[in-house]
Image (tube, rainbow, N blue to C red; front, side, top):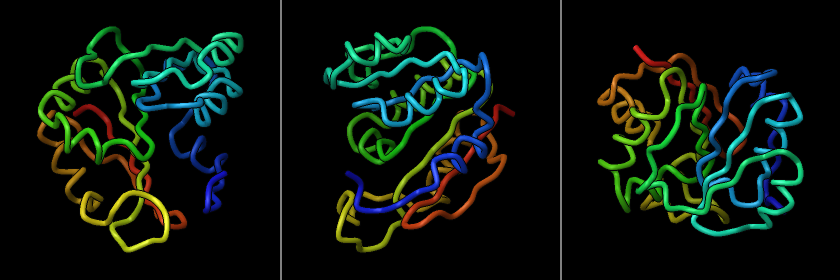
Length: 162
């Protein structure tokens, strides 16, 4: 259970999730967003370090990959989506993550994360990223910020290939 409320349909609309779009959900865990993408007709793949009931996701037609994203650069996807995970990737393997994103996402990258404020939930403030830091990282690999929005305790960004 999340200690905050987000309008998930707003997120889906913002990202432009629709029928037949190929989506990679990075760090998708139990498939919270992957299920919502699939319900809109997207072709969804979840990648995570651990198997979070992946058999359930597979039975729903969602492909799953147990692998660290730092070591993943296979296939291409219309949108690579990262919810609450990019700050960890930056800590662990920033350059490799950016290289992998550039390789597998020829169109869009979606990013949802906590604002850099002290909250009673989420990651420590010290590892949270400011919006402009993410923009700078994405620009370094050839993406531009297409749009962004504020959500309760979060910001949501959509980048597109230049």
